[in-house]
Length: 349
Image (cartoon, rainbow, N blue to C red; front, side):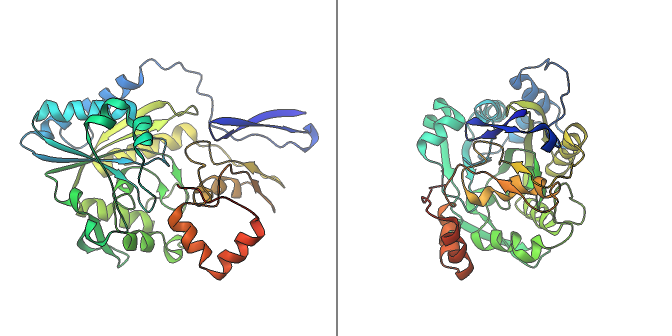
């Protein structure tokens, strides 16, 4: 009997499979090397050596209104480590800057105060200006132009009006944007609901290049990158995480150049060959990535590359977040599917 565990919520799900029915486990390769730097040292080294831009203190000089875009409760960004250093660097350049932390909620709900404390730490959560993006509020976004897809580019007004706009995030494979991180902080992070819905539409996702690991020619990525340029995103800090969601390396600087280096590093260090099997069992990577059904395709994308005919995934959560649930329950196909899945609670993600 072969025993192994899958990430599930904040714990793991133990599993056993008979040896003659076991094909293998796909996981991040063991690099067999001990991390020599602390997470803080990794972040500081990246910020001190930005790719294609000046350092944060240099960029902050003379800038009064500064907006820092960060990810919401559905992403594993280690902001309790990164955000204090970012704020320190900005105030080193301009101690009197008016700094706003803007949470890139996309179409999700806003982060609660308790979630902000868990994410940023008590000091930042209680003493910094933190605002949730509101994609569904018409007056919260401003029109910047037309994206390659033909969609209107509508971005959060606070971000557009900032003297300096920067973002933090993390890079992982994404099943239709190619990779997370970088430009995704802007679109879908702080874009209008209408803009996000076109970017994430079935037509865009159906493009053969809208898939994991592909940026060149990916129409979803191209819209995202264009939106970041239109919004004048001046600087990013993106981290790569290990299997314990700890910082493994970091990249800072220009949104396209720094992000591209991070994506290349991710593929070099973490790519594995697919195994084909009749049945594939997967999860969504544990908390916070498995909070609702809306996020499930991220876990399924890799599994679908391995399965011959069937698949099975396990989610700890309710059906989906509020906005997606509303769409799901008012659609005939969605109502039929919801009946088939049986009872479920309405989560608040």
